[in-house]
Image 1 (tube, rainbow, N blue to C red):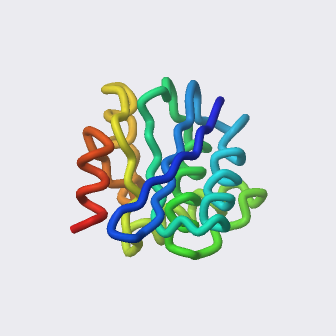
Image 2 (cartoon, helix red, strand yellow):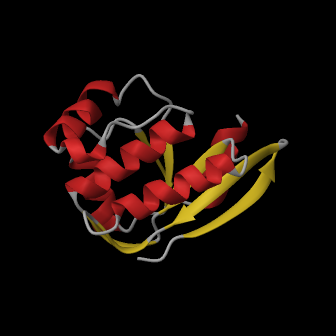
Amino acid sequence: MTIITTSTDLARAHVAILRPAGALDRSNYAELIAQAWEARDAGAQHLIVDMSDVERVSVAGLVGLHAVALIAQGAAPPDLDSGWAAIRALAEDCCPMQPLAVVNPRPPIRQALARAPFSGFLAIHADLDTALAALAA
């Protein structure tokens, strides 16, 4: 998986766009989380995950996206070494948080995200412009 972080200014807010590619699963979700921390440490006030090149998302990938959503809000994600406890934390606190903007998932990925019982922390947008407009609103 390759993750490219780019940024843009949006109403004087620094936005980092994370672009994972391939599978987002247990072999690489920690890399996505590390990129989110790097972007926040560099001053990003908002994080967007562009899923255009993601072919598959596992439960571990959803846990990674949840962690990125928490990082985007300045909160610490659950201990990812805690296994099922991290997944239970995802299910318990996903809904009150501001959703993480996810852009352009392929149809099978969009369907998988929509079916996941704990995906309430995601805001799925058709394209980057729509996601940026939602942040500006």
